[in-house]
Length: 308
Image 1 (cartoon, rainbow, N blue to C red):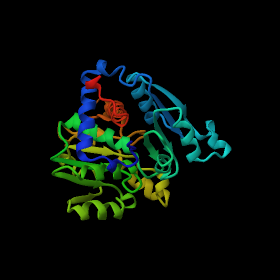
Image 2 (cartoon, one colour):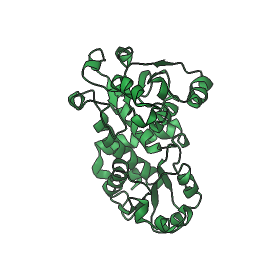
Image 3 (tube, rainbow, N blue to C red):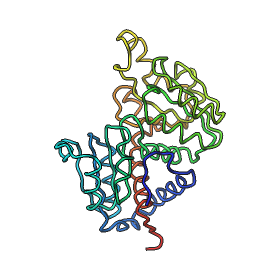
């Protein structure tokens, strides 16, 4: 029995296989419609979520399975003081697989130790969000047609953005990936990512202050939100915030096949006018997330559609 707690739990070969299955689901969806018939997915969301929870539920329903669960801790026995371990022991008797989001880092790992069915970490605080990383990799594969020989610019809050940290770790395993970090000094990439990924693997990277100076080089621009609450004073935020808002003017020098990604939700860091640009793929990104989660569910449940 396998769980998915950290995106690095999966080898490159396993990720490639998930992408292969997800691609086939996109092309041949009908043959997967009953692949999880009579199987149940429990979505245990101890904090609110829109895209991730609905994506998991849509994935299971399109595989012919059913769903149960809750969308906040207030609607679960956690509000009565029940431990995560006890909740998981009970729910794993009702479901075949569990997707769990929790505000405390490490909670899904603790849950997996008590579960009799596979557990998928759907986000634990600022720690991991492995299916978002799979979604991002799937998006790069679909938009660029490869997972190598790419220049990726990460822009915005690189200090606290868990999606950025996870994707950097995952993409560092592919060949000839060039990383460019675009952020204010206050929100630079943490030292431990620089040390454990770039320096340990000998991967070159650049650190710049504006997206304009590197825009012509980028194959992928991964946007994140610069949050007011991350700054020590309002003056610094006001001074810097517009530098990290993507609009049509900043895209003038970009490649024609640039892919603009964002884990969402978006606030104002990407102008809505950019939405109509064919290079904007953040809404397609959410759809790719459904397909890769379908592939992951099939894998963890050890369902081989070709043999059915």
